[in-house]
Image 1: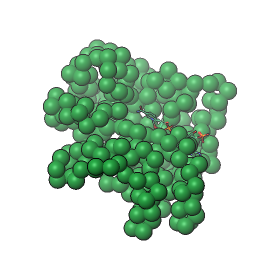
Image 2: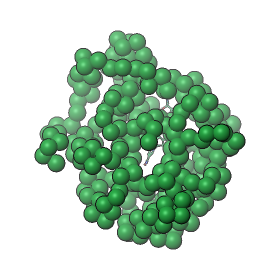
Image 3: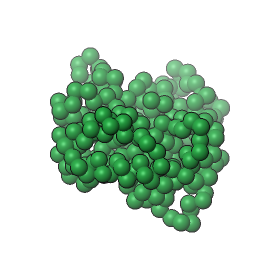
Length: 265
Ligand code: NAP
């Protein structure tokens, strides 16, 4: 799975913003973003339509992640939802298909549908989103082959997953896909981040993303509807963080207390 993708939440909701959103996604693809994250929920299908339009006619399309609503995630409902998403994006296969959050349907049914979709070639792999450690244990008990991903809220200012979820996932080689990596923009207003970014010689957004990318087993999906910011965010791939800067970031944005060592989990 690629380590950096374009997020699309809040896209496809407004006809007035559509052209700018499409332009930003297209710009990202031209710049070489290898992955797009979307969901049937975003703009109630509107974001998937933007993705479909942005990738139409591309020789090589990016890795596509989409998600099924929990209330659609029954045995038959998951398959129908996936087929609607495929139609909106005008593609034959979703590379990674996630259960958006737990609730509604029984997990057994969702996983059974995911297996059927994978066997039919309609999805490449499957995973979950917003699962905590206990949810992941339930999921792993039901499906020993669950390795796709768990997409969760994780960024410098929200380091909760480090407490027990991330080590548990690392041990099982399940990638964590960090959403809201800029804390929906809020992280960029922190003076400590700005100061350290100046020291490193990058922007605050690049520093926040580079920090996530420096965490083993973590990939991320920043969203921007601006061409310039999409380009800026991609620049995070070129930012290398020294042990000194990583320690300064830990000091400014402390990890959760009582973090358990990997070997105890
Ligand atoms: P985010 O990526 O942390 O932040 C997006 C916000 O930051 C937007 O307001 C954007 O504004 C701004 N921004 C982006 N780049 C910037 C830059 N370089 N400088 C200044 N501002 C910048 O938040 P997110 O959209 O919540 O999370 C990313 C993606 O994760 C989503 O789009 C979605 O695909 C996924 N997600 C999944 C879940 C889930 O439940 N699974 C939940 C939330 C998000 P502009 O657009 O105006 O540039």
